[in-house]
Amino acid sequence: MAELATIARPYAEALFKAAQQAEASAWVSQLAALGAVAADPQLKVLADNPKVTQSQVFDVLVAAAKVSPAPAMANFLRTVLENGRLAALPQMAEQFQTLVQARQGVSEAHIYSAYPIDAGQLADILGPLEKRFGRKLEAKVELEPELIGGVRVVVGDEVLDTSVKARLERMKSSLVA
Image 1 (cartoon, rainbow, N blue to C red):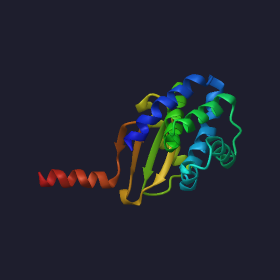
Image 2: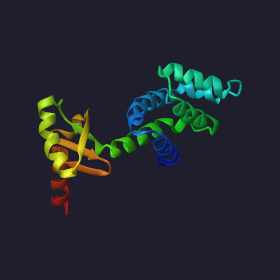
Image 3: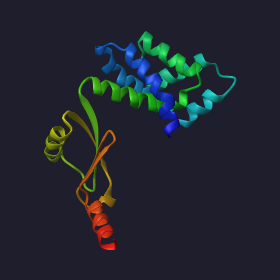
Image 4: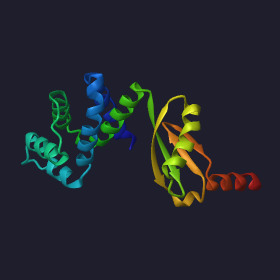
């Protein structure tokens, strides 16, 4: 949903500018929790109910996320609710986390593997990747059995695919051509 990402960007950037260096790291987890709650369909129904006030939605959102937001974070959340942008809150959380990580020189690496990866294997994979991308990587591993073997790594908009599935597809296209 490119539209939600477009809507979320200015909000995430504004919150990032408001956050001090030390606060930003703490706010990442709070905003992620709030975004997860905002994605719940029941909360969307509650927020869309004309009989429910924005203040009530704010209270339910904060209570369900089990956070006690700092004043700046609370103001941010109220602004999001006032502007009817609750649906974009999960995207805001992702973009805010990306901005904080960029400030710290860290990027998120999504590693897709056909088989579970243990800590030792993950370290062996991350070492060369950090050299290749020139920054520290924070890995998120997901199983994707259809890869057959190998891994596919996504860092930002770059993809490094060394999976068996990708190799077979390249062989197929070269044989067909």
